[in-house]
Amino acid sequence: AQRVTQPEKLLSVFKGAPVELKCNYSYSGSPELFWYVQYSRQRLQLLLRHISRESIKGFTADLNKGETSFHLKKPFAQEEDSAMYYCALKTGTGTYKYIFGTGTRLKVLA
Amino acid sequence: NAGVTQTPKFQVLKTGQSMTLQCAQDMNHEYMSWYRQDPGMGLRLIHYSVGAGITDQGEVPNGYNVSRSTTEDFPLRLLSAAPSQTSVYFCASIPEGATEAFFGQGTRLTVV
Image (cartoon, rainbow over all chains, first blue to last red; front, side, top):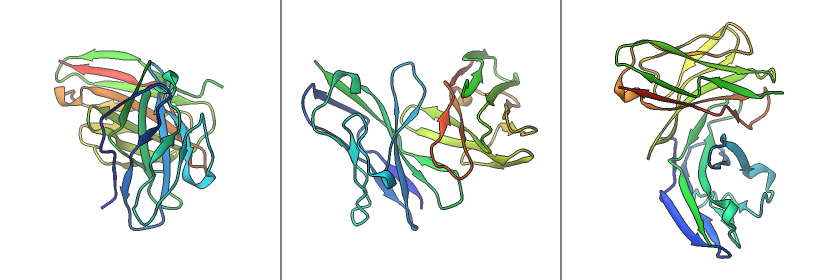
């Protein structure tokens, strides 16, 4: 079955502390994985995609096919990182369907 | 470009009423989709369309209808609203050959 699991509903960290938002997936093919973010009162927007291997706003995410994980990391959290984060799996080449995880709310405390 | 525009932003319906959530995009994207966002359940795909005249069901299609008569518009119709359809609804579009989804600002629907 195709599935995306985000085990933490809420993650609270202090400003300056490292952050890791967990994402595990179940997919039989070659996965395309993404992180989307939703800041308060804003629309959902793309943060990272695994194929570009980029760092956006200090966040990185590495695809680990052995552990079927795509965890989102940032070494030093900022208050403006507080938001809802969704891990998403694109189901197959040539399709445009996403499977989203249940989301993790990140709260960065001053 | 306005991007993806959803109307209305908020709506309260009585059980049994019908209504249409509007979604329009001005980016000439072929792929459009509707999701509902519920606490603890993330975003679930309701219906999607790969182009004008073509629609298909997603994960949770029951109680919803869609049509795609133009590239720009992808309305979602609730046939007979039920309290279980209380949710936040998001429309998204993706350009052909790309992977990034562009989302609307959402419609918060309450069915009483």
